Image (cartoon, rainbow, N blue to C red; front, side, top):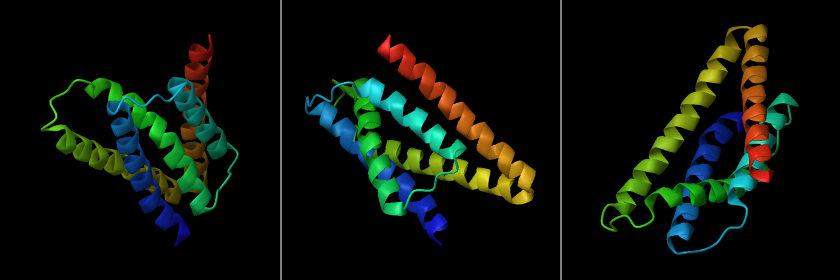
Length: 144
């Protein structure tokens, strides 16, 4: 039940936090080192998956929400100066797409994992390795 609840709650928390981060950017708030924090979030996420670390739902939600603010802040860069009228609709649609995408990937990986133990290990290692490599490259690029 907790795993199912996490699959529903965590994407919503992330999407809500990204909308908050985008709105903060639009209000001219400054989040220092946002690209570095984003890279670090991807790297840490990959490492947690590879290490089989399962955080309690509250801790996971707080971490995902915190990192989501930084992701949203970066997304906000693309809408600076946009017409205000469609902005809320854009952000709502953006949030819904994020929830759908994250949920679909989680459910897809779970479906693969249920097929066989070997498929589960492959899916976990593949997703964890990809996130770790991408986050590491992004972090190195931002720190260089």
